[in-house]
Length: 180
Image (cartoon, rainbow, N blue to C red; front, side):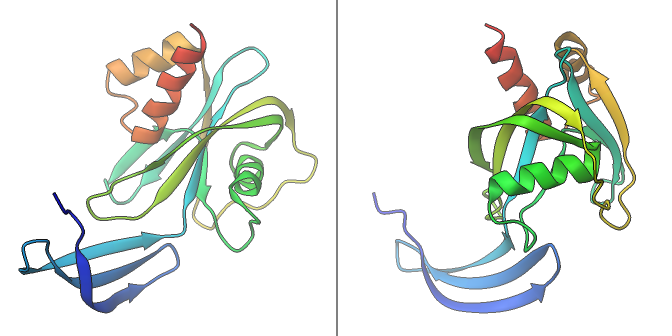
């Protein structure tokens, strides 16, 4: 079966600092027309940052889209300051948790929400963490509480609903698999 939709018209709805939004008119495989609203994103990284004593570093912060605080792994978008995803990992860890990793390994890549966004996130493992010598400024309006948790504690936080963020759950489950 042919699933391909062909864009026959496109209109930019919004052009912002983090996202751009486009409305497309598409021709469906059956010849009918439909509309798609698409959020375009530059890409992002998420980091499973593990300490020397095998604890995950998490961040507690306010998230306006859901109107509450979340507990997440360090993460951020790839932007003009970065040469690539790997560089974004190093920068984000400096800005957010004030560590520099000696070891960085790409674990996987995934689309965060394919129903409306093209955001592609790459998940990395960062180990052999050392405190940074030169701190980069945090993003404006970014207020973080840093937490360090064991694998058992992190799994319990998922089970009791303290951690609801998909990239963080994925990172913790990947960590759990690494232990086997």
